[in-house]
Length: 417
Image (tube, rainbow, N blue to C red; front, side, top):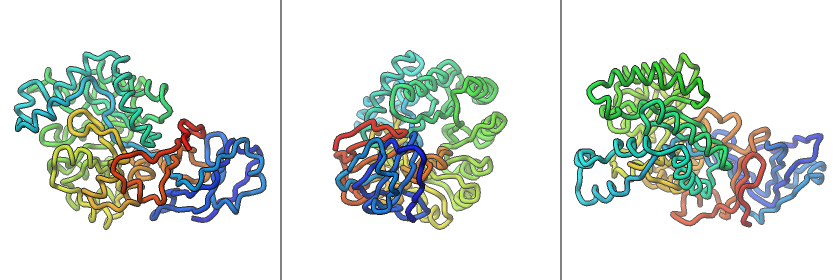
């Protein structure tokens, strides 16, 4: 990566030295800068390059921090989560291990219905408190931006409360939160046998109301045999389009419903899961610039065997993001860095692809890659400091936590070096 020698009139707020940088800039490789320095001013990267090329004005920085040869990466981005919900479902995990089927668990009051019930019963304060504990684990792991979906309320009041909780988390924690309305996640129990009526409610009331209240950054849906049809999903996308909201889709997790093709038609930010997507879907995604969000935590928890078509994504140039899919039923995951390891082990991604998947490609999946996801001049100063000898270690280690410091918007939120 070429050195950037931009100078500024005002002194930098912070000068970071004695480090190596995996900038994730460019289209391949880590964008590595050895013996690097980074100048921070007003929450943005004012300069980045080799330390020996620092401009004379760097001496006027208000604060200088040496990192003793540590590696610096962009702050990690968790681009697909269901972090806000009531209750938990550890008992179902145990039931499955004793041989209970999904149907048997559902008949016993479990499954998503149990989470909907617990979420509807939870107050805003309770939702914030429980999600906050989960968020703290992700932040310790280096996450600086997170997407949080609704979808366990399935009525206007409860969906609103989930999204309010997500906004509250952003106010209380050093993290950027992107909210997604996933009211079309499942059919609520009171609408059994009336799925069309529920889609009407989602399109005519839930999405427009929450969008008007400023609680929605994007719209998602679950297009699958056990969820919503392509035709119903398209109605939801059309609603989002009228409101000028970007869309994304839970697509091809269990079967090929051509959801990825539909998502690409509406220039979706991402199609997520995509284990069963065909080449027509991959081609459509490539043409539309739709990111494939891979969710190895759900793959692991569900003991799936169908791997996403990684070679097709590579061949057609589809960006691959990685996320936790943190949720109570199928991916109770609290470490994005562990997902990097799983993506390499299960899906055969390279460590570089995995790190791209949790930085610049995850930013693209949220539509914020012009400001986040890589360390470049002018971008937001979100970064992590790692006590590692090479970037591949972020996917190599299973367990532990080499994250030594985190900067969010130009301010240190953690420092332990």
